[in-house]
Amino acid sequence: MAQIERGRQDFQAGRFDKAYNRFRWLLFNDTANPNRSDVYQNTLAAIRTENPLTFGVALALLPSSNVQRSSSQETFHTDIGDFTIGDPEANKSGMGLRFDGSATVTHAYTPGRELSARLSLGTSIYTVKELISDSTSLWVTHSWLEPGALYSLSAFVSDTQYKDIDGRSSPDSRSKGISTSAAFALSDRNVVNLSLAVQNRDYHARNYMDGPVLNLRAAYKRRLTPQDTLSINMDLEASDTKSDPYAYKSIGLEAQYSHITQKGLVWDLSYKSILRDYEGTFVALPYAREDRVHDVTFGASYDKITVWDTVPRLSCTLRDHGSNVALYDYNAVDCALSFRRDF
Image 1 (cartoon, helix red, strand yellow):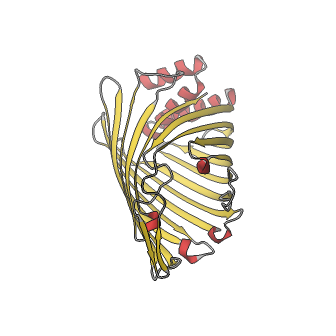
Image 2 (cartoon, helix red, strand yellow; image 1 turned 90 degrees about the horizontal axis):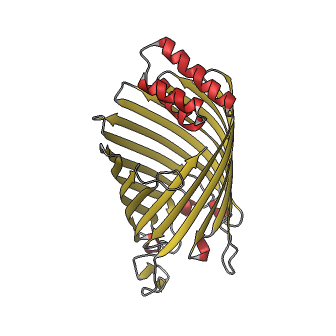
Image 3 (cartoon, one colour; image 1 turned 45 degrees about the vertical axis):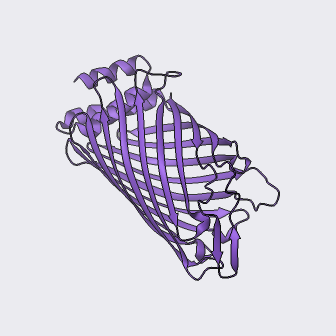
């Protein structure tokens, strides 16, 4: 009842985003009483009717110890000779700045049923000009909001453009596809999320990388205590490019532990491992590329610290990207100080 009252106060004060998120959480978790579930669905529809247009802005500072993913190896050994990889004395670190903005219009045509369209624009600015890019995406989504379950079906198109650089084939690309997701509250402590996405990537100049990409994701979250949560995620992905050396299959496994302190500090620690095997033999090598990636990530936020009425989040990832192709064998420490506000 306390959550319901806080949601009503947010609604009456015009804090529609907070009110919507609170009543959506109640619909998902409070399934004991069908009458209350009806109230939650009707309230969510009323919030969308009152505030159909929402906006979101996000800003992230992105320092990296290896911003261009430069190889940790000095020599690339091939069947046609040995080649030096870059300058081992060169400074590999760099800084990035990412900005994203979005506008979403949503129509709740009946309680528990929503149709939305979201337009997103983003730009990435780096100290290394090769990484500067702009992106645009459009998503159209139908959502089903049920007691203890959330479903969605989306169609999307996205476009990414990089800065023109002499002597480099353009990495610009366009993707279009569909995705579907489902979330289930198995009990007050267990949640399962499933998602499937299929997209086709079309590169403007690098057409050897064109082709479909399939991604299947399964996630399990268990609330151990009111302050502690354990999550286990699995990703399966397959890419069928025109050129076999770039086609791959991969599996990723991740475990994350998060904790909320009584003073409002939220922190999490995760480990992720990715095994990615490519189809065809790599150029000038007698074997196919194989990558083994290991990530350790720590993140934290503190609700007593706010910037522009948002709570910033700091995260850092230690990555060991091992590969049997020396060009792709590297290590990096990537951090992000991110801000996000929805209104």
